[in-house]
Length: 124
Image 1 (cartoon, rainbow, N blue to C red):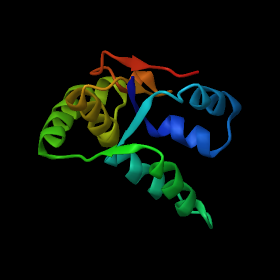
Image 2: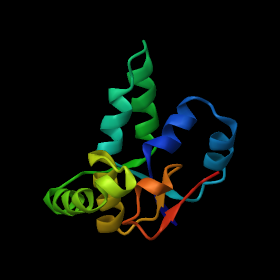
Image 3: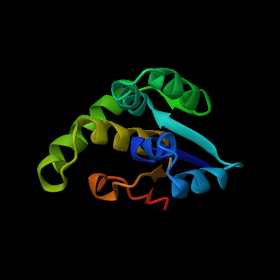
Image 4: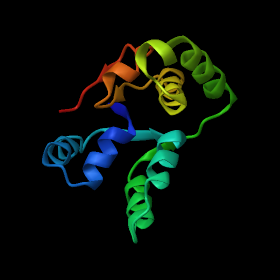
């Protein structure tokens, strides 16, 4: 099985949130992916000493799906459709598009932000 992880899950892992760590431990046979938009979000929040290195180590453990023109176009369409009604921002739209184009289930704690993704899961 393969999964696309949203930043909400990875931030919980970074913060050592026990439910997130337990969920991640159960994914030992799962191929884990993140959007390059998620990588950006994690690095943007890495403002403490050593935080960027911790993000780098976490990202080394997953595969990164690079946002290309197809994902960008799909993301823009999703953003226009759901921004006002669901509070989805540009990053949410790109992550949703990544899940759809890559045909990966999306794992997030912010299910409401991803109405365009039918295969979205709340991990814990």
